[in-house]
Image (cartoon, rainbow, N blue to C red; front, top):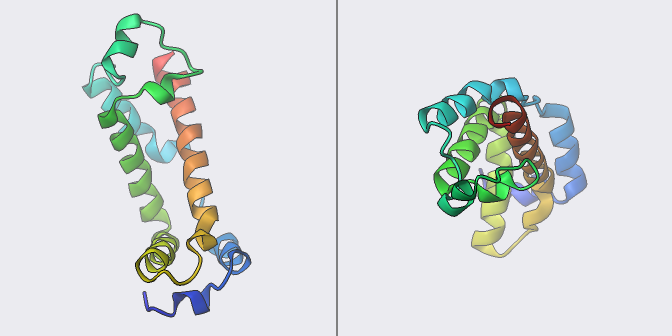
Length: 135
């Protein structure tokens, strides 16, 4: 991306409009196989050890007790699918963030909708994984 990215997307409204016009939805079915394969390969041991040892694995707090490996695997799986479906949106959002951090110019929150969508999907997909595989 060129350094004039903030001229293209000077504010959240502009980026949000771009997002709305170009976003291809990511659904749980896009990550289901990768998520469930990881759980199966790890024989269900996807939690930090003391949480797992207590045997109180509940939907209410399991996400906060995932092992670092599980968190990275699930986030990477979602990132890969998200990028495959929305490469331009992903690269543009990342460029806006990086440019703001590197130069101190522009507003790193212009692409906030990207981060909000990613986090919402991550939470929703982990809930589905719990319901379908871990419960």
